[in-house]
Length: 246
Image (cartoon, rainbow, N blue to C red; front, top):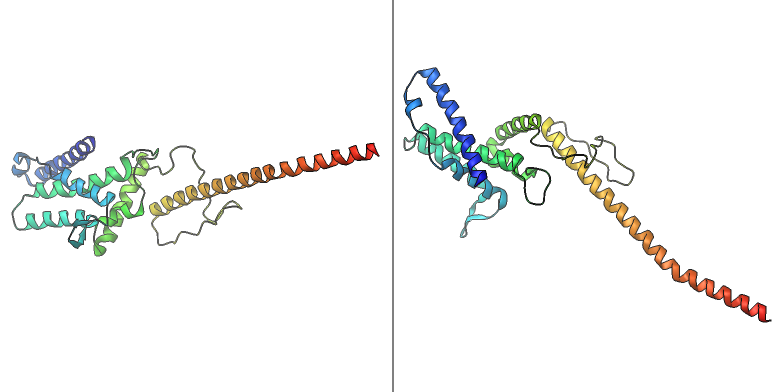
C-alpha cells in the first residue's frame, strides 16, 4: 500500500507541475481545470513489479510470445495509441508513463527488500533499458544513467551500505582472489562504478570463503594428528618401561 501511495503521489505531483507549466506557456485554462485522477499510475507500476518478479513467465499460459518482461512497454504503447486516436487525454498518457517510471525507480533504488541491508535491486536484468524493446534501449540506457547519477548524488543507490568492503582498484586484487578484469571503455561511467562495486563484493565473498576452507582444513589436520601423537606417546612409554625392566 505504501509503495502504491508513493508512486501515485510522485506521479500526481509531476503531472501537476507539467500542467502548470503548460498553462504558463499556452494560457489555456483546460490545463488548470482538467481533473487528474485514476489508478493508471499504480497499474503501470504493478506491471513493472511483475517484470521484476517473473520476467520470463507468460502473461497468458497458452501463449508464450508475450511475457511479463514485455508488460511495461506494452502498457505504454497501448496508452500512446489510445491517446493518438483520441480515446484518452494527455494526462492519462502521463499517468501511465510516469507510473511506469516511478514504479521502476522505487523498486530499483528505494525499496528495502526483506533480508537485505542495501536498498533497491541492482540486478542487470532490471535496468531501465530492459523495460523497452531493442531499438529503444539506447535511449532507455541514457535515462537510466541519468537517474542513477541523480540517485547517487542523493545517496539513494549506494551499492555498499557502510564499511562492508573497501572498493578495490580495477586491475589489483588480493593474491588469493580472482583478478578483476578491466571494464570496457564503451560502458558508461555510472555502470562502470556499479560493476566495480559488485566485483569488489564478489571478490570479498570469494576471499572469505577461501579463508574459511583453509581454517577448516587446518582444524581437520590438527584433529587427525592428535591420535597419531597419542599412539607415539604410548609406544615411547612402553619402550622405556621395557628398557627399565631389562
